[in-house]
Image 1 (tube, rainbow, N blue to C red):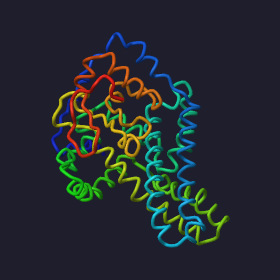
Image 2: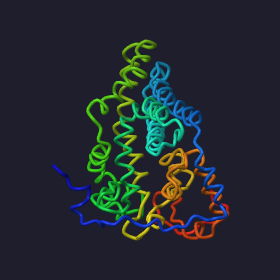
Image 3: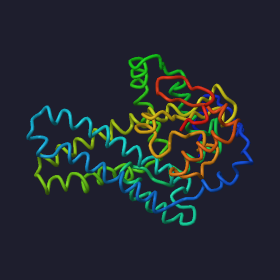
Image 4: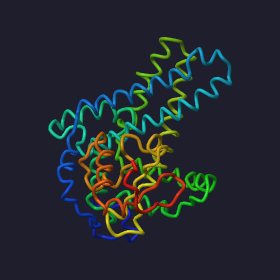
Length: 328
């Protein structure tokens, strides 16, 4: 039985948005060079992200921290959960990279295998399922078939109250349950894939903690991971994804895409170049380790890009238009 595309009941447009941007001829070589992938570099990045989640949660729940008193654990564990969630978010960004074959253009199978083991398993993502959904977002941008547009409309994300921390937080909390259900649906995760992060936690966090420090450490580390995976990671992802587009205010991909380039945004919500979203939608084949450099080259060498790009430097602000030459 044929199913309706996501968002069809919302009456979204049938025609995909036009690109809305012409490649600058003077930067042709820079754009071509920016598409070069480096499998070893992305693999190393994923290994660091992967291991740091383990190290953060084991350190924060270690016998030394627990022996120092409840206050030490009360400080160390929330900090570790936040930082570990950020690292899982970074791994999700590398799943996104894999969906565009940005781990390796020449060795796609090797890239997909490494992305699955190092990024997909800890985050519960299947590369093929995510690729199918995400390429609809690019290929059918702004239409009823665009899963991101459907979520934006169903959650009314473009009307989020950003006038202050409290109204913004309350608005996000009200939408959080529906957002997470939609995310899981878009991932198309099978039960085994959904279970893999829990098995990963058992093998690389709970078991080492038990062997090194007994059941108390393993339980504390496992609970820390549950908070990271079930609360911290989805919260960071939700904030990041709610900042990326303005569908109703634009009729092109360029005009409807927002870059999030503030320092705190790039460090916490948009790791591995994810904040340079305009560049990504113009050239999805640019890998994470090249995207910031291309953004800077465009600012310096293309007035059209520099004066019309939509961007934020803080979560609680409306997108601005036009950047200074020296902006990162």
